[in-house]
Image: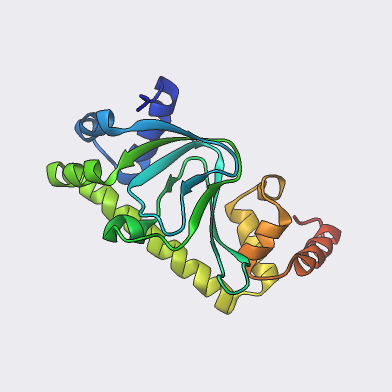
Amino acid sequence: MVSPDASSQALLTQQLRAYAHLSDDDLRLAAPNWTARRIAKNEFFNYRNAVCRSVGFIVRGLFRVYYVDPATQTEHTIAFVPEGAFITSLKSLLTQEACPYYIAALEDAELLVIGIEQLHRLYAQAHGWERFGRLLAEQYLVLQQAKGEGLLFQSAEQRYLTLLEQFPGITQRVSLGHIASYLGIQQPSLSRIRAKMGKQGVG
């Protein structure tokens, strides 16, 4: 295990205060449980059919959550998760059952990671950490529902605009193929949308 450096720990502390309003006592209680982890580009935070046993805070880098259709071997992108966010396979983490998708680094990444056993101990010891767990679950539920509603109620062009608003600069960091997969369209359709928006000075 590698201890977090001071700058990474400071970023984590800042985010935990903003995210779950943790107190100094809450932060001190958990500090020994966070370890540093580096994941190279195209390597995995969690594999398909593996049980997720940790939550990561992304200090640097960008991750893609995706699954592969067993019939066609087509990849379907579920989410992009950037630096400053927490990452996990929530259902797998909570049930300790196998995760049905991959979580892969799109860039060389640095994380601070805490295991599920340590989190359970923190939940029992401090209400602040119980709040963190609840907020994490609520965040994943909202993101999942928003993604589903976008596919139902928005056009592909609207979904693309929403993505650009949520992740400024994402087109410089993510391939168009991955973006098209996230939007639920083929890459030629995305190219047409980008060309149209380019004429309008968007994207």
